[in-house]
Length: 532
Image (cartoon, rainbow, N blue to C red):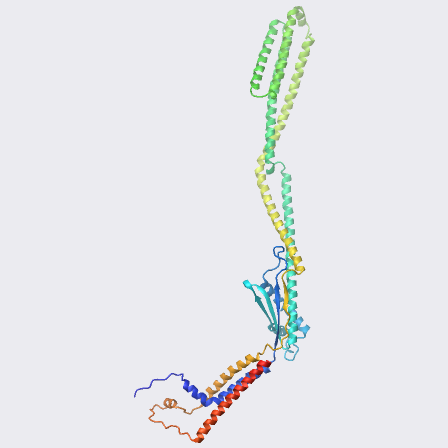
């Protein structure tokens, strides 16, 4: 005998037959489950939720005029304010002020448990605008009394508004104080740098980099003066030699015999000297002007030499005219007063020349000392420039830091004044705390939907349990599963009028029961909607 193919485990017809046999139990269980959940929604104590909307207003003063000096991260500041408001001290003060959690259900709670329960009853929702910017936020509080919920929400709203103002003012003042302390430190550092630069400049007067040009000019002038003095000294020394030679010749002229040959010899020497002086004058005149010192000195020497030549010529003429007087002059020691006067004049000029040479030498020594001093200054300028550059760099950094802090401190003071005048970012209550008319929990209409789901699950569980405990056979499939023989024939069910009556009665009873269940659920849902 060929085996029949196995049937699928899911058989809708079988489940429908089970429902037809067990529907009274299903309806009763479904109604009982719905009634339990629906009744629980009316037994649970209601909680009313009050809410308020707080708007975050931006500063009335444009940021281009006054830059705020507080934290611009509103979300972080909101978290900080929320932590402060939900602290144990603040919540215990509100609990004591509004006499919260004094009923029988919460009388045994400790203060910490009351604080923890109040934190669970408080809810804060942020409202984000464009670019994820916080534009407002809602505050919710749930309580068993709607008026208490409204009062607590109002108190929390006041705390948020006041705390935000206090936090912003405190942050602004702290920022200003910090900048003032840093500004004072920068001022002291700048004063120290100024003192160092001032002391360095005071100790290096003359060899500062800024004085290099003037030092070079002064050194150039000193070198020119030194050159002029050396030239003047050479000229004076030449004059001294010349005066000494003239004086020697004059003395020789007086000491020797008064012969025309001796006078001619002296006259020849003077003429040669005069020629040398004139040749030198011509050479210098081709290069310099008449105001050149050497030219002027040569002219003086030429004039004196010419005067001396005239004196010698006059002396020779006198000797030729009066030979007897010339012989008598040999017997007297310098008997001619004119010759003595010329000799004294030459001696005076020689002494004056020696004094001029000594003055020139002292002047040259002083000029050389000054030239050495200024050359030393110029040699010291690179090292001084490096040291001054280091000091100036530190001073410039301190000055820039001080100026920047001064600007920030001024802006911070303006921002603090703006916060104290409450012209900065602030919270404004847009909607006052609401007085809830219906409880937020339990939501009885939602409980009705949950009751339907729970009733269906309970009815299905009762049917499955009864079917599992029932050992009777209800169809051919169950018989085939129990007996491994083939069914040859079937005896059809013969219904009597009494059986038909009972079947019709069960059908109307099931319809009535289903109608009653639907009516009860509909009425209960309507009551939950209207009064919940």
